[in-house]
Length: 118
Image (cartoon, rainbow, N blue to C red; front, side):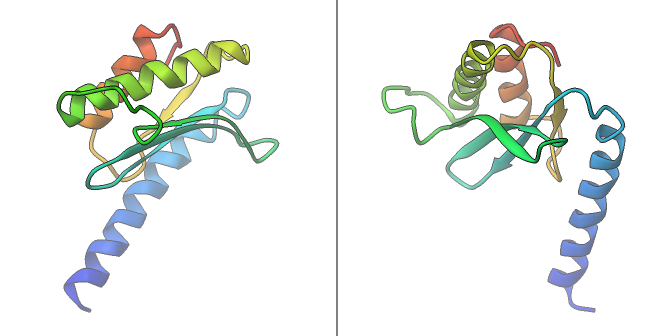
């Protein structure tokens, strides 16, 4: 098995392990994130209806400056603002295959500062 294929399978197993724990709470929407090299995206998903309730990304933040962690925190604040406008107060955090540090942690802290309970 090639190295890339092995890393891909490892990443899929990690994602499945994390999501398996989250789907036990089907009444609460989840925050799913995607982290690329330069951008970070987050969306609140209702798994029962299979639809996105709110989303935010670093692309839509034009006037924010700073390092990537600060931008991720601003994305979390923006998503929390959109969530509260739709009446969402509690979510579960789906970090996917990413470790909980750096930009992922900053986004979660921004959500908490915005008033959303994780």
